[in-house]
Amino acid sequence: MRVLVTGAGGFVGRHLIRELLEHRHEIVAFDARPKPAAHPSVPWRTGDIRQAESVRDCVTDGRPDACIHLAAMTFIPAGWAEPDLIFSVNLLGTLHLLQAFKASAPKARILVISSAEVYGHSERPHPVTENDLFDPTNPYAVAKAAADQMSLLYHREYSLPILVARPCNHI
Image 1 (cartoon, rainbow, N blue to C red):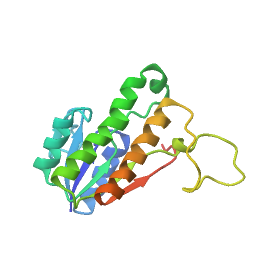
Image 2 (image 1 turned 180 degrees about the vertical axis):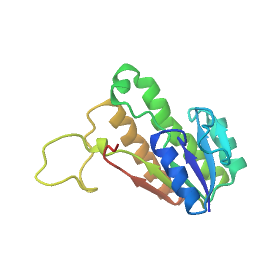
Image 3 (image 1 turned 60 degrees about the vertical axis):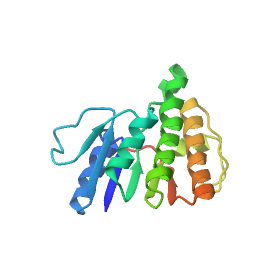
């Protein structure tokens, strides 16, 4: 399977690429950073998720069968310092990706990585479940919640095969 990995140069992206290669998938990597030395054989597109044309070109040229969308700003304090940037990367970047797939690869499967931050930190009588209401408590979480909902809306409205995951922090 040919898999587009956005945010390929990040912490999770680097590990994901190695795992996908071990399972013999073809990779199309997309990141704002230049190609790292760790994956010399992986086709790499340096681009900005905030630029619709850059994302559209990557999807059109890369012809992916699937996408794992990791590209995001994840440092929560940055959301308070630069809310415009958090929203342009995390929400508009996701929207650009969804529009590109709708136009060029509508049958490709898309996994959008959201965040458990969308649930907030309210006391609950049980562990957080997917049925809990969103209660974001910072701009990062609000942007991720909006991208999460936009992804599900594109699934419903355009029948794009989209799955959203809301992982907790990891190291």
